[in-house]
Image 1: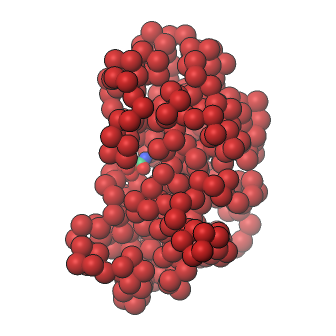
Image 2 (image 1 turned 135 degrees about the vertical axis):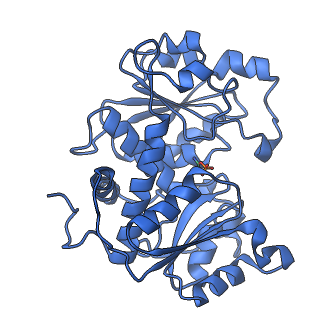
Length: 339
Ligand code: CP
């Protein structure tokens, strides 16, 4: 799967350089074993329960640095850091000295020099967080790097799915089929989802037009199919993806009408889903494009249950678990934090 990494990771002589220490950083799910994912998910599930989770990160400082727009990831990392008692500083890329020509490494080293324990970063370049991790001594968490990975999104999608399907005891997803539909090639979410969901036992089917879901994506460990209607009836969850016009300008999409005809989860299609199947979307949603308005808000009675907002809630818990793991070495007292 290293072929999905672009020059951000390969720039030195075209060879893949050693991955920075995974006990200090969360850069990608690829390469993480299922047990490590489960440990984070168990802890995140504990953080979903209301209550005071202690000031595990008291005295620590977390910086969020976003060079691409975000609502969910950015806010939930800040909330996660604060809920664990750490200080959180939030910088937007447009307000940093990058616009004056400073390199990403220098910006990261400058932020670290102020006494920061973790940098949460979203960048356009695949491999950008990996470069930063090599440049600094503090922890680095990838909040989305280009079209490569979005590791905390992959974990939160598993957490939301496992909660919907009653799989939080073991986080074993064996027997579940997840369809990920739409602009897969441009989606870092899809990549992290496939890695996490297949590692935990789910079958993942990627569905989209040839330009958005090329057959080469099967190297990720998922099947690639074209006919959404043929997949719908066997899916336990359908995760829609936004068409990322900002990354490819709509190349390969004949027209909005044609795209919707083939790949939108319309009300008519949603009615053909299994009654216990759930609708997912990492957000932001384009209602009326990849998903019908009513389907996005499905209540599980008239239309399949939408767990889109559960995914958002799970995001805070997963990010708490990730920060705890990297900055405190895991739950207080060791183990996985379960009683
Ligand atoms: N899912 C996701 O990454 O959303 P944001 O862009 O709002 O962070």
